[in-house]
Length: 166
Ligand SMILES: Cc1cc2nc3c(=O)[nH]c(=O)nc-3n(C[C@H](O)[C@H](O)[C@H](O)COP(=O)(O)O)c2cc1C
View 1 (cartoon, rainbow, N blue to C red):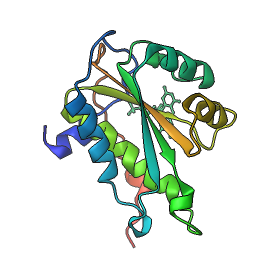
View 2 (spheres, rainbow, N blue to C red):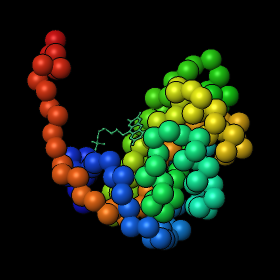
View 3 (cartoon, rainbow, N blue to C red):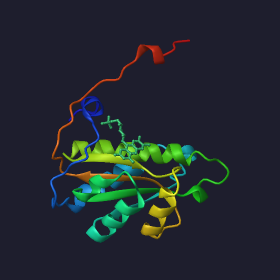
View 4 (cartoon, rainbow, N blue to C red):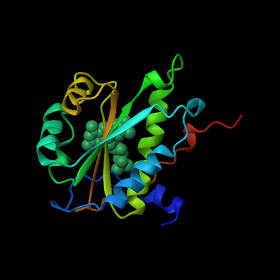
């Protein structure tokens, strides 16, 4: 899939073919894409938790009020910020956002559906997800990944009123 086509075709998918297994090389490709994202002073202030066990996915669904799609997802990638790797700057939410988007686009290119489920700065969900993962990093998002069992249509939101040429 061409990059331009992928950007325009991507939609959040919230229903997956339960029980689908994502091969290790595809997981690796998604993580690699995430880590290719730009970051302030190239600090790469992130870490990733790949959650595949049903028991932990269930716990994430309890910790986060809007990630019920994990019921049928093959896995979740938790993108966690490490502000300590970027002392005194504070660009880490943007950096993690770029990494998350790269996961969505890489997954799409590999044939998977995804849904970005935001954690930070929403509380208590970020703290609750952190407890489930047992991490010190700040959970910025859970990305549900699976074989899509629905195909939301591509749509466009180009709004010339939001664009200002100076
Ligand atoms: C920061 C952020 C947080 C989001 N959190 C959730 C969420 O918790 N649960 C969910 O189902 N979708 C979540 N979404 C997905 C949005 O609802 C979705 O991207 C938006 O409605 C546009 O639809 P589309 O992705 O199909 O284009 C989130 C998206 C972003 C960027």
